[in-house]
Length: 174
Length: 174
Image (cartoon, rainbow over all chains, first blue to last red; front, side, top):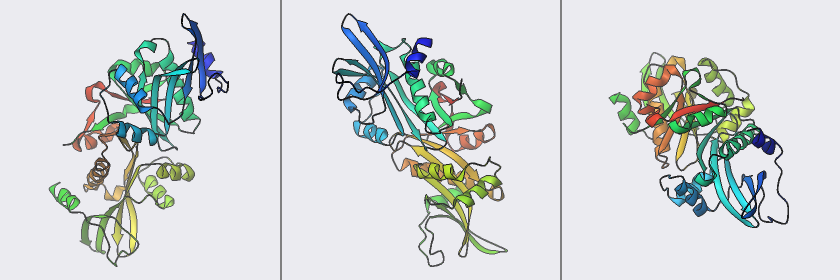
């Protein structure tokens, strides 16, 4: 994980002519049989909602109305997206967002990594990026609701389960 | 609890000359040795921050910077306050707020009932009012983080602990 951490710490904004329409923070550059590829994070809120739907489909989530997803992004405090860039083509490969009161609390929702990009440490890198962005806004209490299979993933990132007996609760009608 | 429910359902806006500067939803009118008093809910976001601090002190919370509290209220999706009115005098006796993406998720924070007004069903009434307001905005997923001593209180309101093994988690630095 040292490798990711180093890249993450040294992230820079893109301003090259190769990717003229995109700004973000570089995570990684790789070369494979298809040529050179880069992976970037962005906090742009204007995301192609159909591309986001494609990512959500790929991770197996239930479909949600595009209209509501658009509103949710609009009113999220932070929207993080992760992109693979090859030449001028880019592909959405990761996503997370957070609601916040911009003062004390933030809650992270909808964390997704495209299955083809899982197991490479990119989810961890994206979450560290998300936490860093929230922390840079003076937010001290970062929370989330974790499905059983990802509890260990979040624990390794420093998230604590039920601290001091505090329990996450969900409302359902009587 | 039928009593509260009835009052809650039949809540009306105040527009009488007796409380000219206040609008809200009537919960209850009582008469005691000091005369007639009413209890109202409001969703006004412009709350006297020192009055709110007084309430937070009364319930024993740690002091928070007024500047940050102001910002948190400004960026909360919903701010609910509960007031006791006697003639033209009003007193803040309850508070809750929620962050939200205005589409799917809302998270309730800072639920406080003044100790002198606890044990009367007012906390339950205020939470029902809060839930109703969130639900009227098409928000389906209402969440909160409950301290151990209030878990049963929220459970009685329909909140469920760790549904399907989903766990609330808090971030702390490594």
